[in-house]
Length: 412
Image: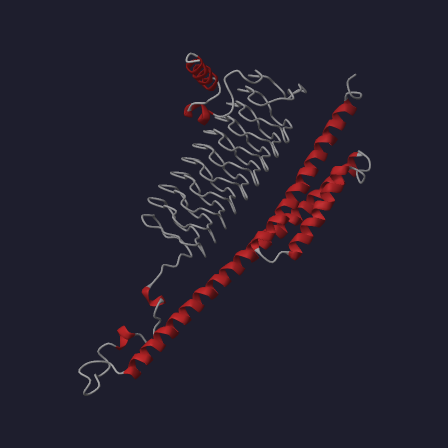
C-alpha cells in the first residue's frame, strides 16, 4: 500500500508531462513542426487541388496567385514567401499563421481572421481587408500602401516600421497598437479607436484622424504636419513635430468665460463692509455662490452641447460612408448582371447567391433608413459585406463554368 502512492504520483506526472505545454510552446501557436501537409513550393495556379485539411500545412513559397481560399481554415499554416497575389481569402482563418514575406498584393482579405499571425515584411499593397481581424498580430515592416482597412481590428498589433501610406484604416480598432516609425502619410484614420496606441517617430503627414479616439496615445517625435485632428478626442501631441489641423487646446478661460462673475475677478474690487472686520456679508456670499453655480451650469451645458454636436457630426459622417457602401454594392450587382447577359451565361435570377446579394442590398438600405445611432450602422456594414461575399462566390462559379466549357466539360 505504501508503494502505490509514489507509483500513482509518478504515473500522473508522466501523463501531465506529455500534455502540458511550456510557455514558449503556447506562444508558438497550436501546431507542431511537420504536423500538417507538406506543400512547400507547390503550384496551385494551374488547377491543382488543395487538400481539404490545411491546418498547420507548410505552404512555404507556394504559388497561390488568384486561388480561391474562401472560408478555408489555415490555422497555424506556414506561408512564408508564398505568392498570394489576388487570392481570395474572404472569411479565411489564419490564426497563428506564418505569413512572413508573403505576397498578398491585391488579395481579398475581407473578414479574414489572422489573430496572432506573424506577417512581418508581408506585402499587402492594394489589398482589400475590410473588417479583417489582426489582434495581437505582428506586421512589423509590412507594406500596406493604399490597402482598404475599414473596420479592421489591430488591437495590440505590432505595426512597427509598417508602410500604410495612402491606406484607408477608417473606424479601425487599434487600442494599444504599436505604430512606432510607421509611415501613415495621407492615411484615412477617421473615427478610429487608437486609445493607448504608440506613434513614436511615425510619419502622419496629412493623415486624417477626424473624430478619432486618442486617449493615452503617444506621439513623441511623430511628424503631424497638416494632419487633421478635427473633433479628435483627448489628443495629446506632446513631443510631436509639425503643425496639425483642427486641434483645439484646452484653456483656463473655459471654466470662467470673460464677463462671468468669479470670486477671483472680484477680489480687491469689493470694499469691505463697515463694521464687519473684513468678513463678507451674507448677501455677498449668496451672490458669489449663485454666480459660481451659474458659471458651472453654463460650462456643463456647453460641454454637453459640444458632445452632442460631435456625436451628431460623427454619425452623419459614418452614415454617408454607409450610404456610399450601399451604392457601390448596387453598382457591383448591376455590373455582374450585365456581364452575365453579355457573356451568355444564362439567367442568374434563380441562383441562391444572386438572391442573397439582392436581399443583402435591400437589407442594407432598410438598416440605413432605420439607423439612429452609430452602433446601428454596423448592421449596414454586415449586410453589405454579406452581399459582396455572395457576389464573389457567384463570380468564382461563373469562372469555373467558363473554364469547364472551354475544356469540353468537366473531367470524368
